[in-house]
Length: 521
Image (cartoon, rainbow, N blue to C red; front, side, top):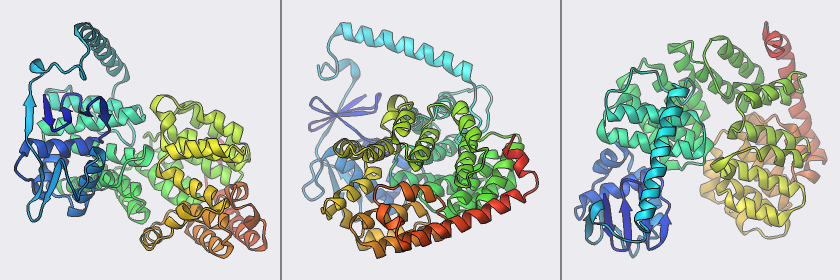
């Protein structure tokens, strides 16, 4: 089915929006919101109705809906002060502006969509091949048994269940495009079965995966949390509902809330290796390396499966300069080749060792859409800064979205241009940072302040980061922006504090029964 709204053509089958010959990029949730408004046009939709139609949950905060409307308007290039497509009706919600025309496929002959019968035949043939390949792939792969996957089911009996199973297979690939496809499939499944527990649970995981690994947006993070909380209210003793909540909270940087949710998931299911490994990651961020390794050991011995256990163990062992670090790095890469999280952590390892060429080489192993993943681009840009290729770095960082803005601000500050740098220190952004327990945000801001020559403020931020759990002293030593500061007297004090913390962790790890044997396995 297609709809025409002024100069827009909306195709529901391929979930695409076009203006003239240009495709407009809309995230899945924005497309669902647009379709909800179109299907109701010209009548307005209230926020509770939008929550049910677009989010498919009973309640979404007004702020979240407002943010999504803003994103949709931005994608459509619709000025809220002089709207063309969407108007706000005070007290009633939102409505489509202007008439909407519904066009059946067989009546549509616009060459912007089709270029002739031969192309249609070719497309049809390609689709047959793709579908056949997809069926073969699905039959060979089976169910995914890890953090984003949901419990196994019997053979699907209806189209909603088939979509859920296909979405599970897509999530199991851990790739950006496949994650988006899974989200689309799950929304389609929920359109057919709005109360499906499995579809909602998997959608929560998928949205959090997109947020943490593929640069999702804040409304999607909040949606994941809202879904998880609704599921907990229905099944409070289901460990996966608590894992979903913990994952969504972690995606938002709310680690102190995420940790007890993971612990509750493990309490309900002691074989939930993913929950243990995720809790271990939080302890890693907080600098409690011994506790993180204890949980990873317990997770590996539980008999369950966690995709990122090996790379997290490698991160910890490299921090404490443990002799088994390299073996765990090799294991992580062999078990999960081409995965974004694994590649980025190994690239960071090369950067902290002062080897940007090795970092670029490992980043080149990313395939397809993942080569454009924001975290991959950000590290690629940073490696080019190390190599003195500033122009190339600027271009790459500009493509990395918000992840590249910190480095761009620091580069500008080194040249005396402070507009972007100063934008990070507005009252609103500082308030957000103060509430964020992730120490890396302080490190990034410290780099900007150091590049501006504001050493005292940079030292203050670095000290906060160490207090929050930052233990990566070599990252600071190799930073292209912290060189003079970190080698100064104040910088040496910070380094010494980190080294003391690391030594304490080494002693704890060496004295933990069974841990050294596990690490050497």
